[in-house]
Image (cartoon, rainbow, N blue to C red):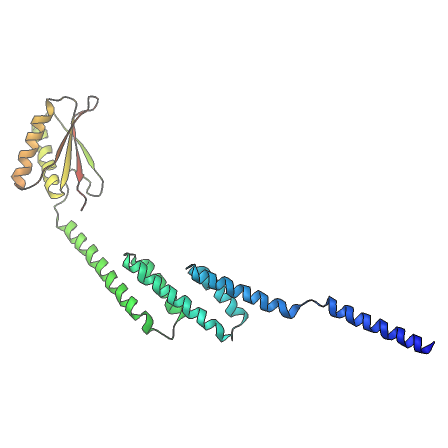
Length: 238
């Protein structure tokens, strides 16, 4: 009986050990699989130029493994991608977007400032050009005489004409002619009667030519029966 009992106990122990081995979760293999998936997603984001997403994914991996030097290659790839984006958008004239991308590249490669130097200089020159252009436009606006009847910032200004008082009409036309010349305006003469157009056009043309004989005055005739006589002044776009 004793040999049989010993064999039975040995069989039970072996069965329990085998069951324990089979039920143990493969924890050791799950962690590498999750990391490999995370790295694959990071590589996909870099390949698709989804740089903000790639930056978040890289930060998560670095937080999990702060001493993992293998992640440095992805950090450099991301920095180079931001640098390339900065160059591309700068060529398209978007200085602000270029500066933003450059700042991300600098954060990611603080030990290699020389790599960002060329783009940084280009952005500085582009910003200076923008400032010079804005300053020139401001000086040009300040050099112009004050508008008499138009709003220089509006697409167009409508001026109702006083046809019942010739002295007032003449003063109106003097002011309109001054704005037409100073602000390079095209003019639409809108009148309810066809016969009103020729003499209003002649009065305005004489005044414009007196101020600037070489001015290219562009007039448009519109007969609108249901409105009083008026002129619409539209500053030409640069």
